[in-house]
Length: 332
Image 1 (spheres, one colour):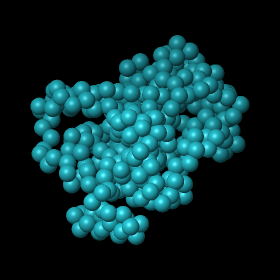
Image 2: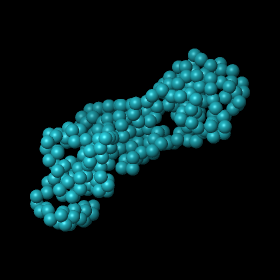
Image 3: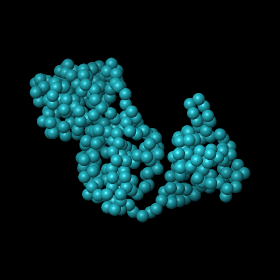
């Protein structure tokens, strides 16, 4: 790692020499400025994040432009846009900062028993209901003073995670930014949660499933959600996409973003909730409901955890994600 860092620094020195710059006059903080500027694309927000004044950052940007002989960020109608050169530099600068951070970070071990650190975790209702109770129990045993701040997908953005403002995101992700680290916690299937008095239990066929009334529940994406369009089944998630694949469509009469709602609704109405199996089992036991496998094939999904490369080598974060992994493995 030290050798790789040496060659990267040497490469930068050579580039600066080409530009007839004196390496002793270069402030390495400028690389950090450039990294934040390219993420924020706004001088005011970048200065706030760095904890410096806007004029100081503007001066830093001027010096960066002189070093790289490129404007780097250009004002457009959409705000500040990076140049082609800046887009090439961005991943290289980020990698270099991360390696330097790894080298200079204190090497003392993280002591969970004494720590009072706050870990911020974004997780869906599904992850909160299935994983978190056991995770919190184990955390209390190993780190009694650590604080866990649980956020919903609507509370944060990918940028918040990338910048390390959120320690961990646990959810079902269709795609993630390439810079993120990720691990699969487990795979899950789908099950149907049904009131024991529902007449469909006499013949739980695909035909009767399609004639019944259904609860749609989903909130797995990032950012603030908006109302769904019942006419566009293709955008309603994996269950309805699986039905669309076989040319079928179910009748949804209730839309909700909370995984704890279907059991209550199923208990009092002739509704069917098709849910991840782990959650369905929990709710069936609690509310004395019946579980049936779906009368059609729905692909399994993966629950993943994802985190910023800025936190990857942090000792406290390493302990935290190892605890999550070990807790998840208890369910497999």
